[in-house]
Length: 240
Figure 1: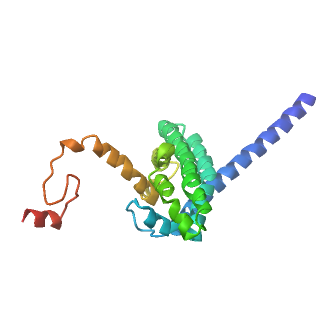
Figure 2 (figure 1 turned 90 degrees about the vertical axis):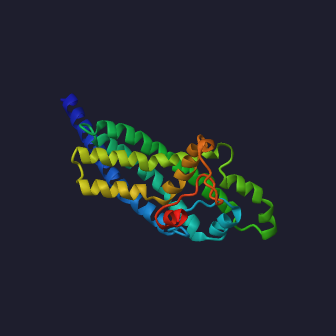
Figure 3 (figure 1 turned 135 degrees about the horizontal axis):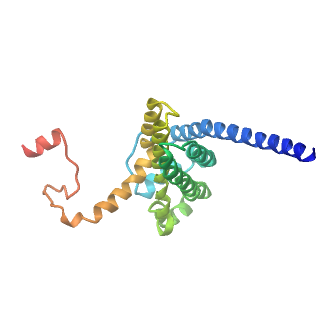
């Protein structure tokens, strides 16, 4: 009799835990896109995808700019919800999309962790400097340049690009198992691939790849070097 009662209590406890997990996962899936969206729209120069390489331009974006720091803080707070959502999607894929779930989950969760590292290093740290007098601020320019260049081991923060890649794989797996419709999966993939910071992060990766064979490229003259992109009317004009 006591064993039966104990089993009933255990089953009820397990049911409550499972219910809490479902609620938590549902809230995470709902909350993290909202936080990322708000963090994105509060970013200055929202439609500018070019990489900033000089301290003056960079510091003008964040120094004394509350919305800049607030938006990045929201992105930082989105990370725990992203991780929960990633594990939830991963657990849902047990059939045709199981490998998409396994690989995508690992990449997505790792990328979310690196996103938190990036925001901690390059956002929270900056708030300590934004109210310095101009003369003192000018004296730390070399240190800020080192941060901007991701000197030392800060290069590892670029690895947050695995976040959208992982969730793209998860979305593909969810579509393959028909958990979500195709149009929704395509929407998720397009949205993730168009993330401003993911595009920016891809730049150094592509440049590093280019550096491995840059010496084999031909300089076509005209001060274009070996990497100046030409297309469309520019090509026609150049050939003319």
